[in-house]
Structure formats: C-alpha cells, structure tokens
Image 1: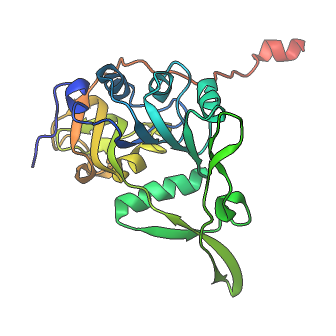
Image 2: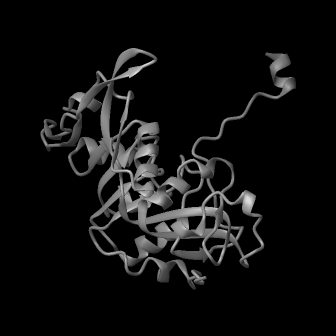
Length: 262
C-alpha cells in the first residue's frame, strides 16, 4: 500500500495550476478544508473553476479565494450569506452555475462512480431544464451567458409517465476535502455535517487532497466506520484538532427563565 501522507498543505497543493477545476467539500462552514484553501491562496493560484455547495463567507473558506479574485467560475447550490459572492455575480465578474442541492450532490457522486449522466425529476418545468438561467451578467445588468436547455424525457413511474431532465456528471482536476480522522492509506472518517459534501467532492476529483484533524496508522480505523475508502484519496495532510472552525450563523434558543418572563 502507498503511504499518501504529505508534509504540509503547501506541498500538497503546489502543483495545482492556474485555471484548474476543483471540487471542494464543506456544507456551510462545516467541514471546510481551510488549511488547503489558505495554502492555495498563499500560492497565488488563479482562474479557478470551483464546484462546491457554497462559497464560504466573506472572510472564511472559499470566500478568501473569491475576495482575492482567484475564482473564475462557481458551480454551487446557493449563494448563502457571502455578500462578495452575490456582488461579483451580479456585476458580471463571476460566472455562476446554480444547481439544485441534491442534483449537485448526485452529479459529484456520479462523476466519481464513472456514470456519465442521469435523469432526475428535479428542475423539470423550470429554467434548470428549459434553459435561460443567468450564468454571467454583463456590466449593464443584462444576461451575457445563460444556461442551455437540457434533454427532457418521459419515463413510466408506477405506470404513470413522468418527465425527467438529463444532468451530466461532474469530474474535476483536483478535490480538496476535510475529515476528522484518516490513515496514511487515505481512508477517511468525517464528523457529522462535514460528511454531507466532502465524500462526494473527494470522489469527483481526479486527484483528491485531504486534510485530516488526526492521522493514524493503517489498521487503526475500524473498517465499519470508514466513510470514504482510500482508493479515492491521493494525498493526505494532518492539520491537528485545534484548527479553527467557524459557525456561519449562530442561533440559540431563549433560556427557560427568559421564556417565562416573556
């Protein structure tokens, strides 16, 4: 078995070229591969085409690359609370391919599984299927690039014909992911919400780079607990358990005393 451990995040991302495509894990700010993103920012890599559920926030996660004008195109399911993301898209500085969240997840999984495309009911009867969804605006606010129409076919479901739209799978040059545990063979275990998009992003990248909070020796992980087998992971970097983690929007329930007074 190959030892996939790399000495640092900087070394692990050093060969990602300008213009590369990346699948990046994370759900909101949960499970963001922040050390790898920072290393890419420090290196100055630009013109990136990134596939990720969202683009972090203005000063964290992928928002750092966005703020430094390093991203050419985002493929995401929502803009979230990143004001710079919204501003760049509406001003024509950034191309954006908005994709339904479940469809985005399946496009990544399909790409990693060798499936070229699939049909789904999600998006039928909308601009997702019919085309015309803005991908890039001109400086005057007009639509410079719009999404093309997609193939729609009817299939019987429980004896009833229903329409489905064709969605193509996604593969990227590289993937950047974050995991709680990993071993030197690349087997990964994710923690709670960090499992949402990280395994799928890892599958879609031709070269997957994983940062892990704790690295253990091969054989120490319970095989039944492994969420992503090492066959999908090519490089692994230990970043330690104290790496900074953020919450996108902290909400708390009123205390029992406060609720009683109200």
